[in-house]
Length: 355
Image 1 (cartoon, rainbow, N blue to C red):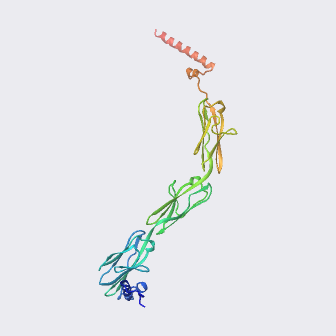
Image 2 (cartoon, rainbow, N blue to C red):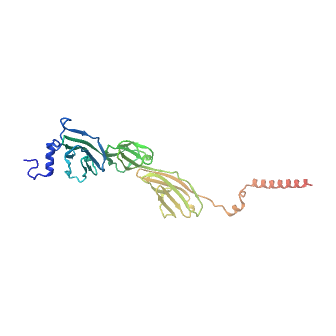
Image 3 (cartoon, rainbow, N blue to C red):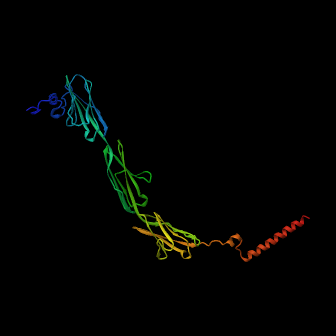
């Protein structure tokens, strides 16, 4: 039974038979020559191409060529002008007495490997081989999810990437300068609130760079700023303020002695805005003066601070008219009279001396 089986002998089948007879394609692969006198086998420099680009495979013809073919690792791509590959990315570019060139578009990693140009001239068979290296840009394939941990915990973030050449992986905290790790794993023992933030993982190789981020939240109990006492006159508006730093954000409670305060009671208003809570008194009365406590609470703990709302006495009209010297004791008044008398005597003496 012939190589072509029961099918009619086609041009492609004849090409294969011819190449095999010429010892270029036994069992689908080229055969090495037994001596330089009978064949000329040449190895070209590697061709490096990036994934997605186009690679050109060029083969010099020379002499009088009777048969020519381009092969990859396991199959024939082109035999002369006849395309054997079913891959639409492969096409013929040039075929003449000087050159036999094909191209592969949108190259992928599966296209990497050895390619052979087999040529039969009138004098001897010749093969030219070239190795195609496909570079692949880095891609982060496994990254830690956004997480929240309690202060003091040990934290491990991971970032895995593939690519060719193998990418280098680094970690950086965006709120600070410099790298924090040059490894796929980022280890943070006994984490503090200062290490919270957005962490950036970068995978880089000769082709390009891939960057992704992880948000790391650090939970800690509230700490409050020391309360500031506030003075206000009767009938005016007074505001007490409480500031707390906490993650998660703190809830605030206000107390007068042991009694908790609520909005719309006794003409007060409590308003929380993130880290700050304000207690506002409208039309302050005598009963509003006193000591107040602010408590900041989250799931990890609480903190508090106290402050005083005290009375400021408004100056009276008589006090304002008398000026700064109005408030005096008895001695200071007598001293003022004596001083005035002395000044009059001195002025009188100066007047008499002129005569």
